[in-house]
Length: 426
Image (cartoon, rainbow, N blue to C red):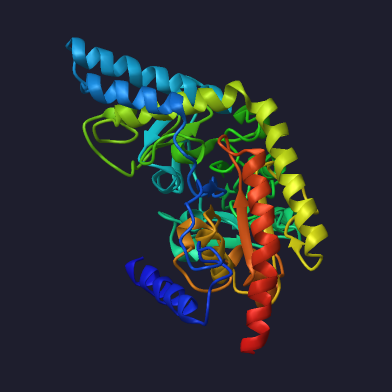
């Protein structure tokens, strides 16, 4: 990762050396520095600012201290905070409280989930293969505890949705050979916001006795989620994507009597022996508070963010008609917009917007240190020129109309200037 970051750093420095940058630097016409504006954060899919409710719960737990496994007063107080958080996280996804296994984040939750051997509702289930889509997060594509040869990546259509016919065909082939499948499919894509056919995939895999896992990181707090309705066995969450603290996440089981036959972390029996190690009570408390805050305003917030996202896209396409809204042909979460500016470098646009005090991403934040087209956009059929000029703008609980106004104005200014400079350089 350090090497990838160094490469991106070199790319940034090269971009900054290419001629005068008066069109992006925060200086006035006479070269006098202007007063810095407040930053606009349109990168909630990378990390969302800490909600006040989460901050309060986090600080209170830190100040109180205590080990949730201790039986004295301080330990029981810590246990109380942990179980309150467990209930709040379960409520966000329509799960049983005892099905929530706290982890250090979604990557660990995925690593815990992606194992062939599970006990589901007290019944042992062993899967032979992992089936997933070509647009998954790298934390799923790597298959974790499935052997490389037992991981199959299935295609998506031009909108970025899993090809259900391909999934059905592969499940049938494996069933015919006496093999069971685990299917892992994200709820909403982190780069485009496209919502996946999770319930349909679950029905297909369950018909053959397999296991359904969902990486719901980008959907939680943005879409109504009920594990039973979606037909999920396992679901991964991350606190900091919905305004909780970094370093906290959860793997949620639909049934409380669900456990991995081989835990990822063995320890002293914490999390009902499903995940060893002293529980991160402050992180869990902040996570729970953020989950409750998001759930309390879910419907209203979805409408508000959809309005902001749609206005941003409409005005940018009107001002810059060559702009492509990636994934617009499918249902998307309300907060995410992926805009492709063909022929431009996304890294240059990200730098230009950053210098205008606006934070966006080029692809997934977890892979933004890589210089190259997004695997998600490539899987959707975008060529290198289109995919290489795509940026992601993601809104959240702190986003305002003024944030959108400033972003529209900056893109109207920056995109033609970057395009003009690119043409002159060519």
